[in-house]
Image 1: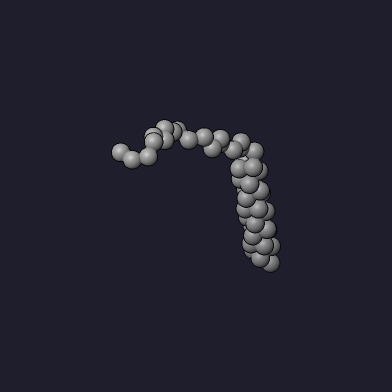
Image 2: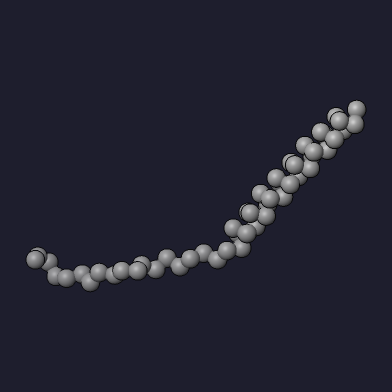
Length: 50
């Protein structure tokens, strides 16, 4: 019976650890500021024709 209890506790602990890691990663991703959407290269629009 103690092996069954140990296996059940291992499953519960592993699932709690996985949920905690997922919530931690989500919190870290939410805390990162968004990068500005500014273009690195801008093109001057010349007149019509070549």
